[in-house]
Image (cartoon, rainbow, N blue to C red; front, side, top):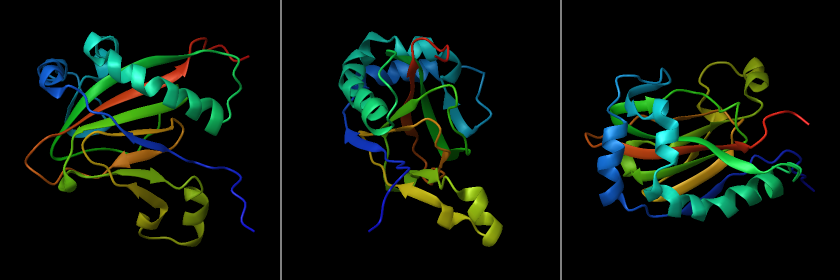
Length: 193
């Protein structure tokens, strides 16, 4: 019998944003000169997180994902239900040709929700790092592709995952932009109880 002790499950569902209304807003938000050093050939509204997640046009989306991330955090990740959750920030990113995000995690949050707004096959997928990466690389050196789990995504896919999971994206191999919206979720009171 196989037992799964530490499950790194993710939730995958779908939601369709009203992109005709949101796209001009997103384009304005990502036009900032400040760029996140993790993102390559990408425009982002990372430094305007509150302006992004407080948009009234995004409220239906956040109403949709709230029960999903709540169940994920308390039911799958098994955090005790002693504090309320909140959205800590969100940002749009558009990845140009050969644009991608480098390996990272979100250590100040509990969960992350990403919605793929405009995404076709050759625009790159999401990759999650094996939690035992550094130990396994001690024994088998060289190419580490086998230690990254690819999650295939398309337009309207929503992925909710543990903020501690290291992840990155494949490069966008098209001349069209890949658009996503990333949201960090955490506890309202950050004081450790």
